[in-house]
Length: 366
Image (cartoon, rainbow, N blue to C red):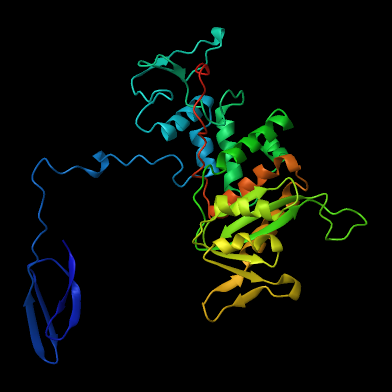
């Protein structure tokens, strides 16, 4: 061991030397001599030390520091993509999707009988299943590695990706198939039975659609209404309204998505007056009077809907710049994607729960 020593008398730094070696130097006509002894570190008993090269490296979970290039290298074929998905869903080995049994058998593939690889049979309930059963990829004819690439491209994109772009990049045969993959990915990231929003929650509505020639900006008969609740520093919930936004619809939306202990922030719309009385507080801002932020000095609360307005602006820009137009039938899926990306700001391609429901009886064969 080689260390750098110094003299304690004059607090000078000496040269590198070895332990138990004297350090001699002169200063102001005096000779300073010091001897240092450093106890060597305790060595492990013989046979217990493991060489670094022999130490098993921790197996990273799929998705850790995932990039598109890594995903394309690891999942370049149908077989590698299927094993990658199995590693995500079954980290400890295959598990029966019907009874939860862990004793399963691997069934060999038989192209002549149209038996695909990756089929398992449970020894307990005797049912056949695959890893894609109960997911958005069930019964698909598109290769699994293209599914994974599409999921990463869509989820890692800051805004949105069009189906035509996905079709060109992944060499998908038809536009309909590319659109189907996009909608399945949006369906997968939609939250099911989410937790209620709490804290300070801003609620507002927007109208998705283009302008009509000869009509003013206030004309919304051709647009799809969307009501959203945004938790400051938290999550967002959006719901498409296929009719006019009324007080009853607003109350039902708030009851399903906002906790009663939340502090509600809305604009001066009358549809929020009666539902807002059941919450801890209800602060409003008057947009018609050019009021956008108000500080209540007595309570210390800030009344504003700027967070919700900013979310609406980003959503409209994303739709306008990527898709130009979306149909009212699929607006809910597009809003599910924007909700997911806002809640996972800085998203790196992980976290999408692809598994939806278990297969119904009689759907064991895949």
